[in-house]
Each structure stands twice: as structure tokens, then as C-alpha cells.
Image (cartoon, rainbow, N blue to C red; front, side):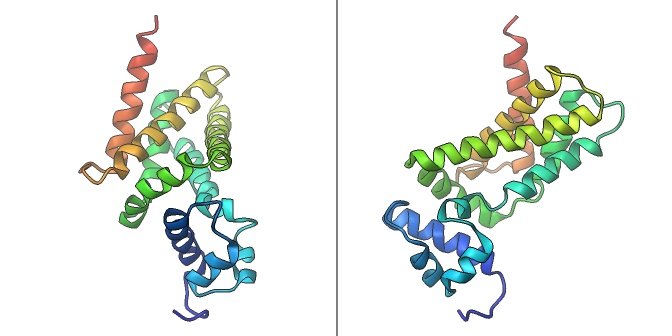
Length: 190
């Protein structure tokens, strides 16, 4: 594939995940990722600050979609209904290719403490985006932050289920189901 061809960012993500799966995260260099993608190191660094970030390429988009989903939820929506709207907005954008990447992505992250730390940061960023959006709807804390935490947990749980090749449900269905289960578990704490 030529360097001039489109989708450089996507090609870099795909190449990185392939290499991390084949030879491990620590044994993979930026130069190898760029070469596998048919690009240069300079192009890699135009898109990502380091090789760790290539696995978290969609974080800003997901945070924006979650916040937008809360913002556009009906004015009468409860905090949890607004979180459900956020999950609907974000999960609807996932493609079949992302579903195929899921198991490999999860395995690579699980096998590296640096990536686990970065994944925790991503979750915190998503929770912060949802909390801020709930605050704009005049939802006070701790309600806003607890609802956002449930949303992030539902998103993560649903992604793991959706990534399972045996799963036949949509990401949106699984996210709604996970949110319902988490809400039921939280209510049972009483």
C-alpha cells in the first residue's frame, strides 16, 4: 500500500495491533508499526505522540459522543436515562472491524501494565466527560459522578461482551443491558 493512500491513522492502528499481538507491546517499535502500515515514522508521530496512544485513538471521539448523548437526552430524562442516551450515541458508531479488534486489543492491554494504566486514564476521561455533561443538566454530585461511573463500567463491560466472537447482540443492546445490570446491583446494596 502506498504512502499517499488514505486512512493513515487507521492503517497505523491496525498495524500496531497486529504487531503487538504477534511480538508483544514491548518488542514493537514505532518504526516497525510505520513500516507495517506502509508509512514513515514521521507520519506516525503526526498522528500519535507515542506507540501507547495508538491503541487509544478513539478516546476523544468517544468522550465527545458520550457528552453529546447526555446533552441531547430529553429534558425529563433521569441521570441514568441520560447515561443510557450517551451509551446509545457512542456505541452506535462502532464498526464490525472494531468488533474484530476487540479480543486482540483487550489481550494486549491485559498483558502490559503501562497499557492498563493508560486504559484506566481513558476510563477516567470518559467518566469526567459524562460527569461534566450531567452537571450542565444541573445534576449535582455525587449523583452525576456515580451515574457517569456506572456508564463507564457499562461501556467497558459491554465492549468486552460485544468483542466476544460468539456474541450476536449489538454493542448498543449490550451497553443498555450492562447499565441495567449495574443499576440493579447498585440498588441491591441497600
